[in-house]
Image 1 (cartoon, rainbow, N blue to C red):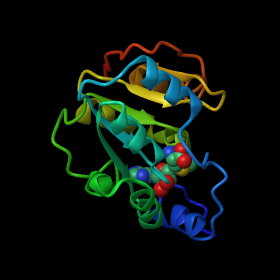
Image 2 (image 1 turned 60 degrees about the vertical axis):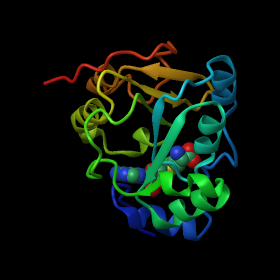
Image 3 (image 1 turned 135 degrees about the horizontal axis):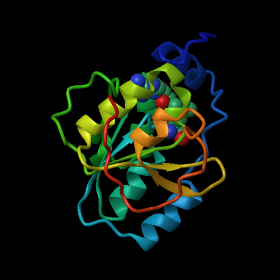
Image 4 (image 1 turned 180 degrees about the vertical axis):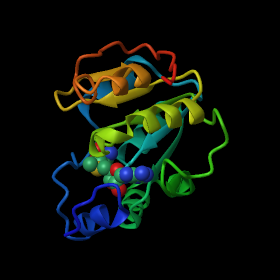
Length: 180
Ligand SMILES: C[S@@+](CC[C@H](N)C(=O)[O-])C[C@H]1O[C@@H](n2cnc3c(N)ncnc32)[C@H](O)[C@@H]1O
């Protein structure tokens, strides 16, 4: 199997072989609780590296205008299959870093086990990209311990020891200030 996670074929082969140990088979409990407590008012959310795409349904049902992106074709096929037909067009097959999003297209970004799958050396790139597509917003992510966290991508990804940890736990969308 391919070993470089920055290439779609790494993920394609795993989805096709059904070797997806990260896949929860549904929406994380932390996200369910968060959405129950914070109903949406049409905020535009982009789900990064959506995989099977369970969350696009949950965000939509909770009142958000949800979109999802994944660069693995088999993952997108899974996501479109399990989502309502009306959502299929909002599940984008594309690379988060190069897809043609207009600046500030989203109010916030959601991720679960996407950012931590990227190379550590990409942190500045991640910060810059998040700040471009979701200007003024932050990232909300589900951590492995089950807490839903919002965190300032610039802060997190400029500190390797913080990234992908559960150390930032505010649910208030923070401002993203890209680092130089
Ligand atoms: C560990 S899986 C997580 C999938 C899903 N978020 C979940 O929790 O089940 C990481 C996902 O990110 C996708 N991915 C990795 N790099 C990407 C990129 N640059 N643009 C879009 N998707 C990407 C992969 O195809 C894969 O589906």
